[in-house]
Each structure stands twice: as structure tokens, then as C-alpha cells.
Image (cartoon, rainbow, N blue to C red; front, side, top):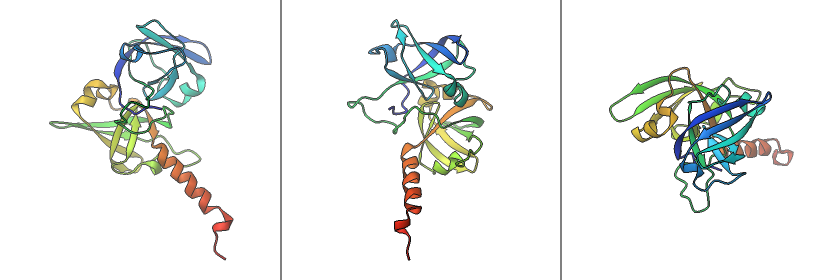
Amino acid sequence: MFTGIVEELGTVAAVEDQGDAIRLTVQASTVLDDAGLGDSISVNGCCLTVVSHDGLKWTADVMQETLDKTSLHGVRPGDRVNLERAVTAEKRLGGHIVQGHVDGVGHVVSRTPSEHWEVVEISLPAPDAKGSLGRYLVDKGSITVDGVSLTVVEVRGDTFTVSLIPETLARTTLGLRQPGDRVNLEVDIIAKHVEKLIQAYAHDPSKEQS
């Protein structure tokens, strides 16, 4: 589990094609301070497992399922990536509960700068058999974009907006993303659980009135 508070910007050092997977090597420092084999690190919002590290770089295997459903497909050496270690019981939950399980890939639609912040509009992926991810979004609710915990400013049908402060622009890849760029999206897990419970209650024959 993560909080969506990015600890550092890493740099992709190598991408090894393994056919139905890639071996991803990332240069980093902070997230390797106490890293061990098998630990989880979020890379642009994707939970990956450390399979090796030397204190300067670490490596993870990224399977085809992850490549198919996240923006890690097409990642190249030199790309910057958001990194966060798994949360510990002693850590403040500065963002919100983030699993590192990407729900879909959106695109940056537009960026509108102002004096002290920047409003970014992001598209939602096309609806699947269950519907649009937009059903989980509410104004002032939580959304994870490329592993960054953000507050939704406004839901606009198949897009939504977020406001980025200078700290976020400087310390995450969201300061680099341009219109058309792909971003990983993870919606609030609490909203998913509420939806499932309501659906189960609605279809429970014992709750029907005679």
C-alpha cells in the first residue's frame, strides 16, 4: 500500500525486452535507502517488486498484463518516473490509500497555468463492460495520477481537472507531462468497495419488500 506522496524522481536506466515481459532498471537514491529484495516500490503508480539492487539502481520484472494496462508500455531509458516506497505503520498518511494497481490509462488534455498553480485536464479511458471510471470520481475527492495523490477539482463527463501546486510540478513527472501524454490512473479503493456493497444489497432478495 502507498500514500501517493512521491519520494523522488527516478530515471529509467535500462529496459530489457523479454518477449512477454520487460526487465526495468531504475536509477534512484531515496527509495533504496532501506530497500530489500521483494520490497514494493511504486513506479508511476504501478506497484513493482525489487528483484535486485546495488544501492544506485534497482530492477523489477514487468509482466505483459502490466504493460497492456499501464503507461509503462513504451518506457525508455532516460525517462523520469515517480517513485514511492510502500507505506509503513509509522508513516503519516499524507495522501490517501493507494494500492499501486492501475485502473486505466488517461491522457493529458490541456494545461492552464496561473500565477501560483496549474490546472491540468485529464481524459478518462474508454468505458469497459462495467462502465466508466468517472463513476468513482467526485469533486474534491481523491484520484491517483502517475502515482501522485491528487484532489479532483471538477468532473467533466469523460475528463476531470486537478490543480497542481509548484511543489508537485517540481517534484513529480506531472510537471513534465504535455497534452497527449499518457498517465496512469487509480481511483479511490473506498469508492469501489462502497459500490460493490450497494450492488450486493440491491440484489439481495431478502431486502425486497413484499
